Length: 166
Image (cartoon, rainbow, N blue to C red):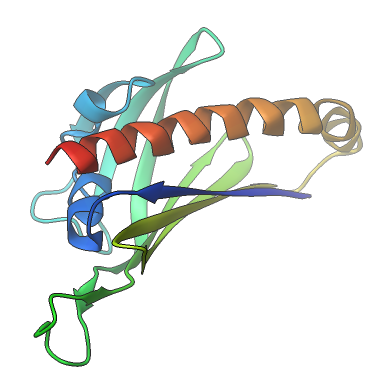
């Protein structure tokens, strides 16, 4: 049983500035209003394998989840070596597992119109769903995804505001 949603935010900043905000895990609590705190579990720069615990408040409930970077491809200079000042793409995938579900968040950057489109694709997959969990997801899943989309849209807007202010 899989639930997925995708949103795109145009940001008036180059991909490298957007990437700097997306990959700043220690600073994410200062950028995203839903994050109460972050505890780094690994040292070093943002890369595949980076792990942290994040405490978020959602729907009035505070919850701590361990997350990790499953894929990391920072934006890079274009084929011309950046001679025209351009960069190409960039993406990262962050995973979490909690309460019998796998969560995947994928951020993809694409330069457009002098800025960057940041697309966030979020998916939740219930592991070994029971009959009751299937019924609950059928009834409450759409409501949960609407709440999740609203929270993700707020995250994207706050990432945009931070990247545009750098």
